[in-house]
Image (cartoon, rainbow, N blue to C red; front, side, top):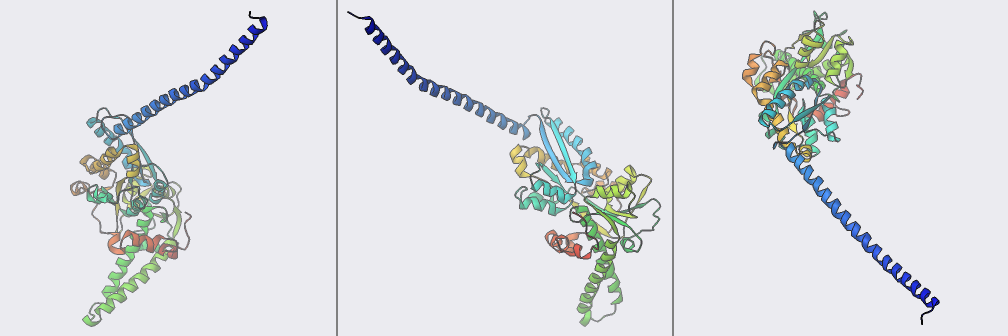
Length: 403
């Protein structure tokens, strides 16, 4: 016969058994929940990866949406690219009707811009005014070694040169480079440590000095015999260099201010009223004369100046990551199309198409120029000789610019 106490014992045993059973089930339920969550998370991750892949495919120009490019450039190119970008977008979207293209611009001193890209600014393309600024990105592994072979004309769609901007009526009668070294002349130019335009300005003045003084020395050595011709030539070259260095010291002593970039120097000259002459690029001078400083300034073309090559390149490390390689290449390649070349001439840049350049000879006259690499050696040699710390510029400049 079962007693009341026995019932209590049985009940307690059943309760204990159920509790143990439940405790053993809980870990299994927890593990099952974690497995379900992991599967769900994996499915979400795969979905995101597929989405990113699709976005990259779209950016590659296969018919997708919302393609975004960033063009990092030097400062005085902003007006041209402001007009070129809509031209390219219209062309590209007509060829790829399902695509939507946006192009951002970044402008500043050429070398500062290159340094920004080297330090992480996500440029799809760089459009600079000096080869060394792209070489910096090649050395960093951001631009392909063969970037100059990927586009026509060694990746140079247009060129420019250095000219002078003076006050209306040219009250100081500035006609050529040697006038910039005269006493009482205030010169404005950008900083050669940060601006490609400033380096061209410095080299233009230096190249003019060598050209001018060699011509004068050769004139005095006429009639020399063959036996001492080589010695005379060496003496002439040495004298020309010495005279040029003296001339450059006097010119740089006249510099009133060094700005970080070419557009900043134009603002200093035209809006702040500092200086008698601005050394700048041909296109920037025309923009000032016909635009924001109209009626206040005139252009003076020196007798002998420097050719400025403006190279462009795709930043492969960025376009590979974003999937914008095809669009970025197309953006640069279309710079050689006739509509873009015409637009360059309208913005006073010298297009690489000789026929279009000839059509604009009234605003882009034929001038006597020299290639910097033909006079001074490779750009690596130029930078090492003139623009490193303690280089020729530092030795010749009385007042050092603030970087």
